[in-house]
Length: 368
Image (cartoon, rainbow, N blue to C red; front, side, top):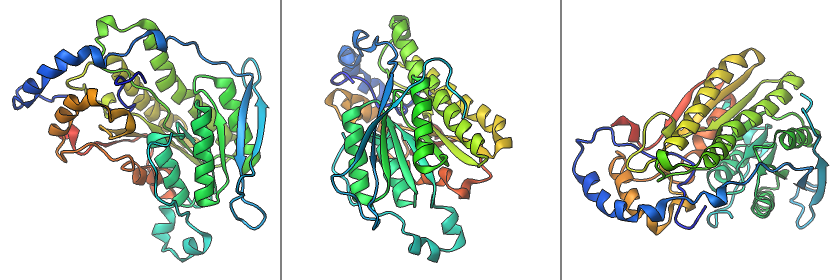
């Protein structure tokens, strides 16, 4: 993301009524003067879809005693087939991650057992950093059997997988995957099946945001890239993981991270293209939820409001953040771990009768 530029890939608010207190109008004066500082340049974003011939993989597994394996890790590449695939840095230093042990799980009441992800294989895209990384940690604490992180950033992905393995002792793998590359996705998902068994859960958190760009000047190449990552990427990941679940004849849960921006229009920043991409994700989730219910696969969306991620912690956004907070009943941005509980719930069997839902978690912003 360019310097003080793009907002976090999660949500951005609206002004339900322009008759609201003059806070917005007064705060807009410095924003108009700074608008150029917020705008994303198009040149750096016009990259073509990466077509990998091999997917680098790093696997961290406990030793025969179940202890984290230290510096030993398996490194290898898996080939990416050409043509149609067969169906079949961390933001901040974080506290200790304590996984749910079998003996503790066995002592839990039935309701609490259902609210865990005990024994589940979980794939998380965008899990190398930010909200995705926090949700990966939450799944580890809630009893995941194994976690596979898909991310386009090799260095951050390896670092995050190694850290999560060291903190928990759980089997953790990192796959360098661009969510626009369907062949690479299919190869990586098949390797997850080979390593750990069919996935039980997909958390699709990968996404980007272009904001503070007028629609009339928004570059068409940027729009295609935005749609490819946010919407096409959500479809390709869901399709590949859904196929693996169907092939195994097992139920599963797919969680798509959308945004409240898919349901409202944000204020004061202009970002119609981002909003459209997230609206598409929400409708995709509803449609897949209906279509795949017969396979026992549930599909739900999480739509965050404004989140206090590293990408939002830049001085150029301070004026807008004051407006966002003033329009949020809880008078704050979301913490980076505020999605964790909802993610675990949707991944768990406790949400077994829930599909096609879009759960907005925004501090009350959309109430106005």
